[in-house]
Amino acid sequence: MPSALIAVKDASGATVNIEKPIVPARANAADSRPVVLSNEDFAKLAGGLPAALGAGGGLKVDGSGTAIPVSGTLTVNGVPTTAADRGAGAATANTLRVVLVSEQTEGSKYKDVAASQASTVLGATGATGDYLAGITVFPESLNPGQITLQDGALTAVIIFQGGTGSVVTLVPFWIPLGNTSVNGAWKVVTGASVHLRASANLT
Image (cartoon, rainbow, N blue to C red; front, side, top):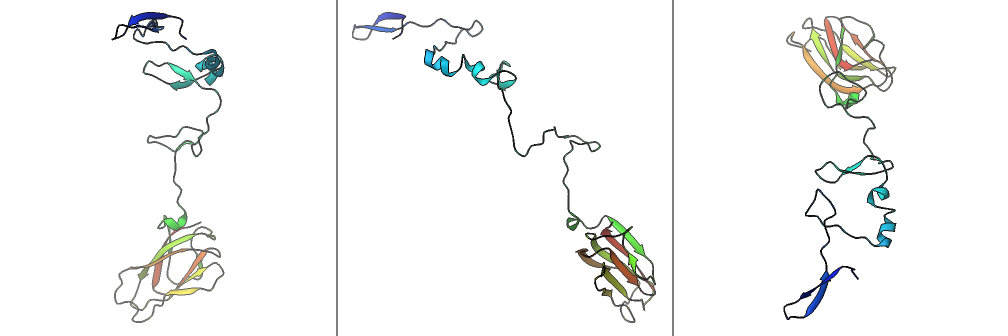
């Protein structure tokens, strides 16, 4: 039972004991009322709430800037351990990046191959995984030569037959491909009176 009681009269005139109001415990919070914990509750908190939560930095609990310290390590899955850069500027170790595989791009490099060229590697060295978006064909006459394309050591395929009637104008045209090599470097052979530009991601 509370130790501080006062006797008051209820509506019927009977005397009723009620708990005496507790004096505010905080000098800077005159309207507050303290809460008295039992010994069992206090023991559960290991000496008080701050002690139960541990020492160190903690969570803000009100607008005054008062912090409740929290000890230990907080693990959040999927979040980098370093802060991410959010502004413009040069890339750093903390800059977020999205990496696209070559199949998702339309070719950021190109290779020009002149007319009448034997097997020519597309790229500096070429390699398996090179992405070939397509080839722009430049006829030099109305009777241009053939163009073949080869993936590494696999059988070459004709991508432009050429010959009389194959074109009716010397306007360049685009052959869309969108393929990734599986056997090595892309290679092309050009016939007479036709040259090309390969648009690709090349090694």
